[in-house]
Amino acid sequence: MLTTAPRGTKDILPSEIENWRYVEAAMRRICAQFGYKEIRTPVFEHTELFKRGIGDTTDVVEKEMYTFTDRGERSITLRPENTASAVRAFCEHKMYAEPAPTKLFYIGPMFRYDRPQAGRYRQFHQFGIEALGVDSPAIDAEAILLAVTILKELGLKDLHLKINSVGCSKCRPQHRAKLQDYFRPHLEGMCNDCKSRFERNPLRLLDCKVPHDHELAAGAPSLEECLCDECREHFEGVKRLLTAAGVDFEVDNTLVRGLDYYTKTAFEIQYVPLGAQSAVCGGGRYDGLVKEIGGQDVSGIGFAMGMERILLALESQNLLPEHKDGIDAFIVCPNQANFEAAFKTAIALRQAGLKTEFDFLARSMKAQMKQAGRLNARFAVIFGDDELARGAVTLKNMAESTQTEIPVDDTVTILQTEVQKYE
Ligand code: AMP
Image (cartoon, rainbow, N blue to C red):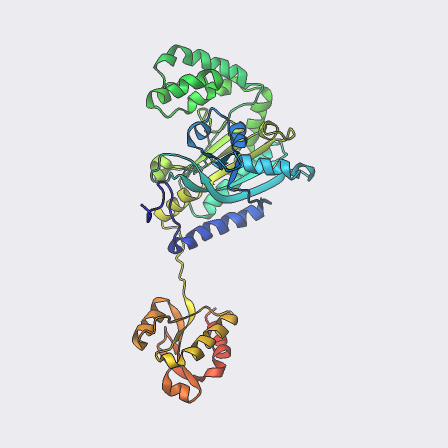
């Protein structure tokens, strides 16, 4: 128990970290091209922020939050997503005073008490963006294009982009009434969540995972018929721009997404070969959110991608580059009487910027050479008794299996030159 991480969490080991860095680097690079700047918000916030922001009839808020009372009697929640926090920071730091849009991105851990399975964890990582202060469909199209660009740049094919418009506060009430008329006669046979959400937020019934209810939802009246002129025009604008950008998409009228704050554009990108957990990216517009949490009437759009799912996808397609990590020099010192001189040389090599290792366990000469090989060292610097007596050390090129004797005092300058030949 003490030697096992909690269910739904996992360690990211040194052998995996280069893959994470590689994906993160692509995200950062493309965000810079699109003008998005990084923000890092706390991993916990006041519970109320998520209840208000995400919506208290959502699965995330009703069932999945890690909520606790701290020692100061405040209700605190580990963030289940980053949009509410980014919007809170936008208000707190008066970013709205700067010319719009405010374009932010984040990468970090999120926490949801979900049922763990492949591609679904209790602590997982999201990369996401938020663009605040622009109503134009151009920013929706840009956000979607940013997501698609990242996934394509990483080499993923078979991406499936679904988009929908979930309407706004003007057209939703009409849809809501239609939904209630549709579900009312079936309510008795539906799950308890649906029953309790029927009055408060019937749109959520479309998102129910219970098979019987899910099937029923497929026949529910579509929001499309109810969209007001403004939402309809906006949606047309998004589709036009995506088409102009050469992005393939499918309009899916049943796509509502699991968070309440979405208005107008909602979208999801699936990587089909992942199977059950195929959603790698989800997002949409949230025009009421800033106001909902106490800020001004500022519109926004954003998305989040699941880092673990992207890594799973890349791994399954062999799209992760090989990382050959090695060191520049391994100091071999078979006689402990010479250890101080070897130690000092190691420090000097590191100070000169060279990746250097040495033996800590007083191993034999043979074992130390083996260790140099294991660490993929370019050179072994051998502090042997005989050559040290001549004020020299042996420099062995590990790949070429050649060796020369060099003055011990010149080790740093010679190795610097030698290592440079390989860069
Ligand atoms: P959401 O914040 O629910 O819109 O999710 C956005 C993306 O985050 C999804 O498309 C997934 O890729 C990822 N995601 C959401 N929940 C989890 C989870 N429990 N474990 C791993 N990835 C997740």
